[in-house]
Image (cartoon, rainbow, N blue to C red; front, side, top):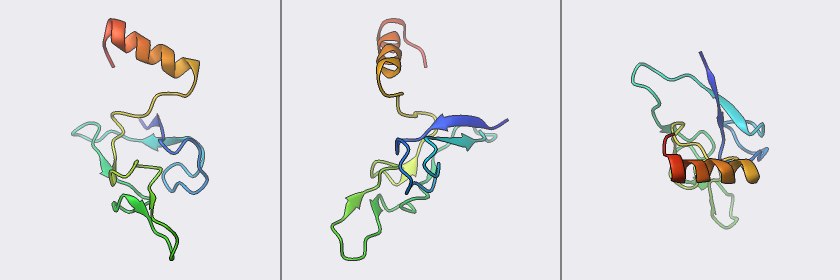
Length: 92
């Protein structure tokens, strides 16, 4: 059963993982939630540029891999409430 995971790009249309939709489908394998190579930068951590200044990849934040087990928090109040919940009550 595929799960919807929040993408770090925040809806960027150039993202090859979620295609600008903010969420992507992920199917946990037999070993669980495993990181995979970033499709936008192809594992390089920087975006390919034809002579322009080097930009850090917005999909993986320069790591080269995307970890679906630790997605970013939702922006705004909902994300702040989730962070507060984890501080006081723990859990994932």
